Length: 197
Picture 1: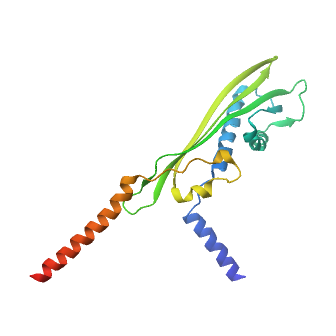
Picture 2: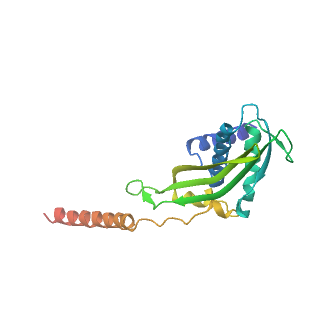
Picture 3: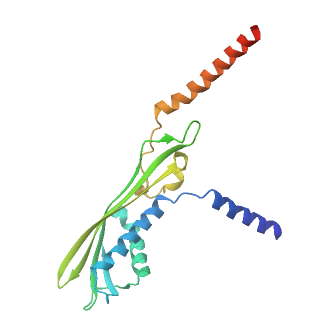
């Protein structure tokens, strides 16, 4: 039992010291949560019951459950059909973009790093007095990750979580071997010069 507790504590320690980056899908879910939080301003204060119509390209259909969960988490009661006295909401995701910038090193012999940018674009429309009041939204998230971790943050089965992997900068790839070989040549040269004297 003590060994099991020690293994658990070690695992927790490793996770805290070397945290794993959020996956692209987790970041997209966070951006959806932000978009839902921002629509509060479109409703009157006593609005709590909603009928949601989710319209998006088929590839983004998987995100509907995140939209529903975010609405419930923000205190809305969802109805299965449109009724009088209930606000009708049209929520649409038009674009999810994942991009990696050109990779760079964190100093000589450092890790290969890339800047990751994830954007969510869409529209929320609220029906008021038989009029739709649309509001476009764009949210983005930016951070840096190791190029080696890209395969871990993407989801194989979900195409919009992927992006082309950035090619390493050719200059930084050539510079390190040149410095190593140059240092080795100078060291050998100095060794023979000093010994011959």
